[in-house]
Image (cartoon, rainbow, N blue to C red):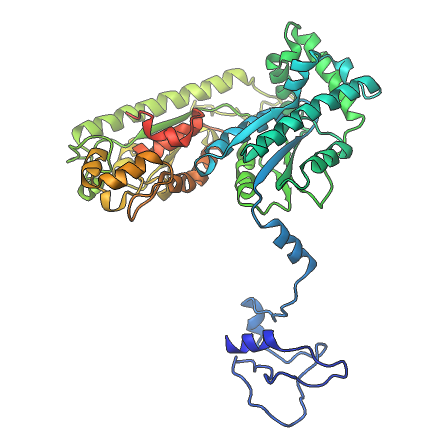
Length: 503
């Protein structure tokens, strides 16, 4: 440490190549400080380095220069947390922007116990204010229509900036934002307001994905209400053609951006350093449009668990085998997973006709084999906590139907010194702490334990893994954990999770 400190404090050498002016000589290879000497220095120059052990290279040894490079300065400017975050959607119509925006809104509202987030859909402003939606309105040669589109974009922007001024944390600005000029305008509007801007661009070239996106859009968008399917599809494709004439991908590396390709796991990002932005990256890789069920269940009741259901079982109960009631539940759960997974596979098979190659040969079925068994990629994934009761609960499920993986993140909420007590017992034992808990259930930490805020952060990677699965998922865990996860799926604030009934 002393050697490093001396190196950091060494003044620069004189232009004539003189020796050190501060008194510390260069350290030797083994880390010891050389004794001062009056002899001329024979230390090697930068072009002629002293020999080192070849193994030092493979151990990752480098010479510390204490230089600060331009890229380091840029990183330092991007790392501090901004007060506000604006996620700006970018992409042609029918690329899943609004789908992604809604998923982001739900996730951010859950993340860290819930950020103040609001979605600003410019298309909704257009429909509410201008009452137009036909493809002709998006003709890029129509100056009046372009002026009207800019008008509603400004209305949405003004509302968003007002939302930030009143205490909002995260906003999602959902529009095509298809040109560099429009994106520069967004940056100008946010400049000087302590707002970090992240562009989220959805790029899609896969014909199957595009076709599904188009179908969903014409089926659900108010712009196509009252049209028959063929007319709606033709109108949408004409609108897309109008936008394609001027569309410019995000390519300004001075900005922070995230690109998603074909609503799959391929993601590219630039300058994404913030805490929230870094959480969004893995979540965005999990987004897809494949339908599948996600089931939540508690572990079976163990022997000796005679207390109420709103507490963590005692230490003995945590390692105890299941009671007769608990064993009956394991059998019922195995039957449920088997039947529902088979139903899922059959439904997928019916909606996806057998494909054939160009030479007429039949391709392998997507979800079932010739003998009717479910393919590995269509089997249920069971995400199970590491406690004995949940592991035993899921062991009866047939391996041909589901695979089981253990996750310590799914273990019960740690209640510290109140571990074996019900909430009523905690209130009687420590009324002052309980009063504080009632005032802020999200952030009040159990003494020597966790808070619900801690639990949300712990569960973040498990939620993302469940979201990224394209086949059925079963999460077998405990009351508080399931309450927090269920709050995400039903879009309820995490602060209300403790009131969600989990039988």
